[in-house]
Length: 329
Ligand SMILES: Nc1nc2c(ncn2[C@@H]2O[C@H](COP(=O)(O)OP(=O)(O)OP(=O)(O)O)[C@@H](O)[C@H]2O)c(=O)[nH]1
Ligand SMILES: [Mg+2]
Image (tube, rainbow, N blue to C red):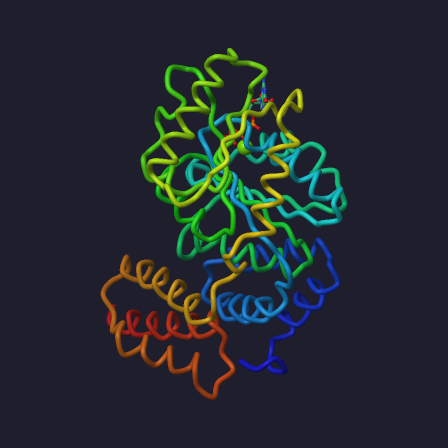
């Protein structure tokens, strides 16, 4: 779809985003959360248009065990980023909230200062499944936030499972928040998650014994070094409540965001591949389809004369697939 051929809804939302209207960002996020087929083409056109306006945005995930103090730390780190002149979007990704309805209130109260700041935008997880799952949803939300001028996109993910690792792979920096003591700081942490972080923070240093804190930091440092000898992952003790260690953590975060070699978004071909892969697994739940010829046709659209960006090409693929599947039912 060409820029001039956008539907009125897409043009209006795009204009609102470019003007930095919070309400437009809210509506745009709702549109891309929609699983309604009639919203899909508009959502794709909006995403493709926004992709060109991500500017100098940077993204970061804050992940870790439930209750570790992730939201409290996001509040602190986010306010620090705002003081440095950035605009901060926080996306709360809680796979469990897809079942339980979410901890929206909890998150907002833990991000007290950010939720009152005119330079921050907080968006909780949608309470129902979105097309392509949690990771796909995060990707789409990140693009919209960046296009709306939030140049620091922080993604809080609860837990340390598969979707957190998937989300972590979509951001430029990952901060893993753990708690020392309680036996073993790495208890309940699957091996995979330690391969993900760029920074590890042991939070609540005010509430744990100093020896436990030091031991957890040392052990984690050693474990990281063994798992990933080529990278130097800082392991920081911190208290979001007293502020102890926060300055060091904020400096590590800033360095990570500014020096990351990863782009904010992959190239169009990778995005198309990612998007169609997610859509195929979604479509597979409805029945087998003629994936290959349709996928090839969609890929041609991405590279050929149509002005389709990665999402529009993927949406075309999905619509065609649904038509085929519908015709067979
Ligand atoms: N003593 C102490 N308490 C803290 C610290 N950081 C956070 N808390 C408290 O720990 C509790 C959980 O904090 P949250 O920031 O909501 O933790 P979270 O990791 O976002 O929690 P979920 O999103 O539910 O997984 C709250 O009661 C916080 O006030 C800290 O550094 N020290
Ligand atoms: Mg939280």
